[in-house]
Each structure stands twice: as C-alpha cells, then as structure tokens.
Image 1 (cartoon, one colour):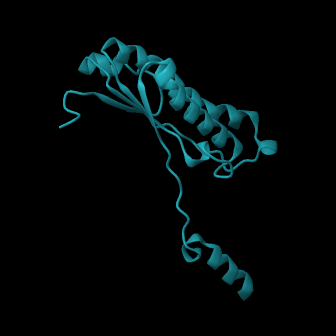
Image 2: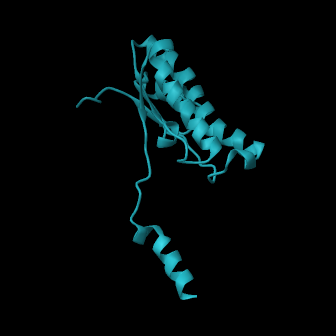
Image 3: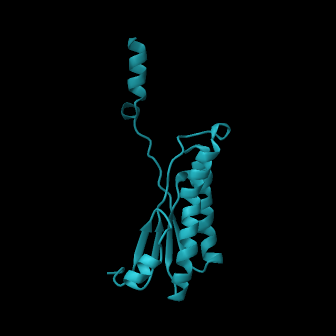
Length: 149
C-alpha cells in the first residue's frame, strides 16, 4: 500500500500540529488543510469587519500556520506533501461572498508558492457546487407559489 508507514494529518486548525503527529508516529508525511467557513454570500460593502477577520483567520491564516509548522518537520525527514482545500471561489468571482472568495484566492496562492519557497510538494483541491436542475433547486417551487397566489 502506498501510504503504509506514512503519517497523514487532516486538520481544520493548526494548534498542536506536528507535536501530535511526531510524538505519536515520529513523522509527518502529508498535511491536508481542510479548514473552511462560509460568509453568507456577503458583498464587500456589507461585510462586517468581524466576519472578514473570522473567515480569513479560519480559511487562510489557519492553513498558513499549519504549513509553517509542518514544513520544517517534513524537510527534516526529507520531504512531504501538502494538500490545501481551496474552492472554485479561489479561481473566479461570483461563487461566494467577498471574504470567502478572497480567502480561497489566498489558499490558491499559498498552494502555488509552497513548492518554490517552502521546499515541499503542494496540491490544491477545488470543490465546487454542481448546479441542480430547476425542479430540485427550489426555483420551480417559488414560481409555482407566486403564480398560484
């Protein structure tokens, strides 16, 4: 098996990273930064500063801190891989509100710069929401409700 004798850490935050993996298993081979919270599709003009700070702290600062802690451990043992969960919002506008979109653009940047400045392999995962049919999306229900009233 390819992952035999490898340690993977999937995290939503950076506290205790490395210590937990290395004290238990003696190494850290794969870091999966899977943190992410939404922003209620808030446009820039309506974003409270507290929402901005929270979304960027979880979605961007958390993965950065996890990378900053994990990379020295990986380099010490000869390498490792980082998987960052971004979003289609990290590639285009209109997929989410302002704070989420900005934070996921940052995760894409962190992923792209990691191999050059941090000496590790980095991969980005870009989940997206598939468009549902009109019947299942609730749009048909809204139209029928308005026509019937």
